[in-house]
Length: 489
Image 1: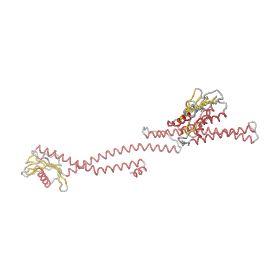
Image 2: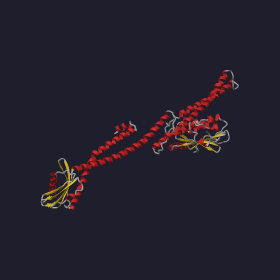
Image 3: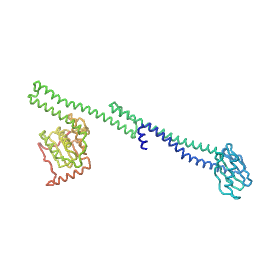
Image 4: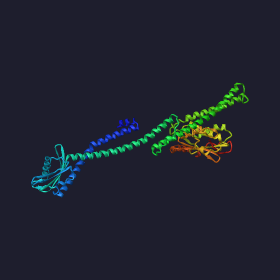
C-alpha cells in the first residue's frame, strides 16, 4: 500500500484520476463475478418458485374446466395427475421445451414426496430437476387423493430471467459508476485548472514577470479560493515591498551621496591648496564629520541586515539588567546632548535576552528621542514596562501604524531603520513595542508579550528584598533643565 501511494504521488492529478477509474472498474468487476452472481442465483430461484406457486394455486382454484386456457405465460407448463388411475395430462406452453421423459420423472418425484401408501402427506413440493443438461423448476401439490397439479418452468426461462436480471443490475451499477466518475472528473477539473493557473502566476512572480490579479479570481469560497486570495495578497505585498525598497535605495543613495560629495569636494580643494572652511584644520574637521556620518549610515544598514537573522538562543535563565543598560546608554548621550533635560525613573528589572541586542534597542530609542526632543526626555522602567518619551512633535496617526516597518520613511526624511531593529529584537525576545501620541509629544513603550515571563518578576522581587530599606532601588534623577516629557520617532 505504501508503494502504491508513493507511485501515485509521481503522477499528475489527471493521471491519478485515470488510475482511480481503472481500480474502480476492476473492483466492480470483482464484485459482479462473485457476490453479485451468487446472490442473483438465489434471487432467481426464489422468484421462479414464487411464480410457479401462484400459477399452481390458480390452477387448483379454477379446476379442470378450462384446461388449455390456464397457461398465463408461454414459458410455463403444467400437468394434472390422478394417482389412482396413474394418468397424467400435460399442457405445454408455446415456449416450453420439457420432454415427456422429464415430465414422467417430475411426476414420479412428486408422487413419492406427496404420498405415503394410501395417505397423502401435507404440504407442497418445490424443487428442481436436472435432466439432459438442463434444470427444470417445478411446484406441485395434491389437494385430494385423486388430483395433483404440477407447474413447471423450463431452463430456458430461468436463463432468460437471470440474464435480464443481471443485465439490469450491471446497467444500474455502471450507470451509477458513470455518474460518479463524471462528477469526479468535473470536480477534479475544477481543481486542476485553478491550480495550474496559480502555478503559472507563482512562476511569473518568481521570474519577476508582470501578473494580472484577474488570473487569480476564480469566484470560489473554498480552500482553493483562499489559496488564490493569499497568493494575490502576497503579490500585492511583494509589489509594495519592492516599491518601498526602491524608494529606500534612492533615499539612501541620496543620503550617502551628500557626505561622499562633501568629502570629495573638500579633499580636492585641500589638494589644490584651498581651505573651504577657513583653515586646514577646520576643513579637515568637516571631512572627518562627513566621514563619521557616512560610517554611521553604513553601520545602520549592516546592523539592520545582521539583526534580521537574530534568534532567541538565550537560555531561560539568561537575563539582563535593563536598568544598568539604560544608565550606561543615557550617560553616553548626556555628554552628546548636554542641553536636554533627562528624567529617569528605573527599577531593578530583568529582561530576557542578551545584553548587546538590548543595548542597541535602548540606543536607537534614545537617539530617536534626542532627534525630536525640544526640552527633555523621560525614561521609565516600572515592573517590566519600559517607556521612552520626549516633548517633540506628534506623529501622524497613519504613520503610527507603519513606523516599525523596515525601509519605512519617517519624519525628517529618516528611514526608520533603528525602529525596525527595535521591533525585531522585541519580537525575538517576546516583548511588544508600540508608539503613542501624548498631548505634548510621543512615547514608545516596551512590555512583556509572553505570559510565561513570571519567573523574571520573581527574581526582581528577590532583588528588591535585598535592599536595606525594603524599597526598590532607583537610578538617581539627572536634571539639566526642568523636568519635561517628550516623544521619539
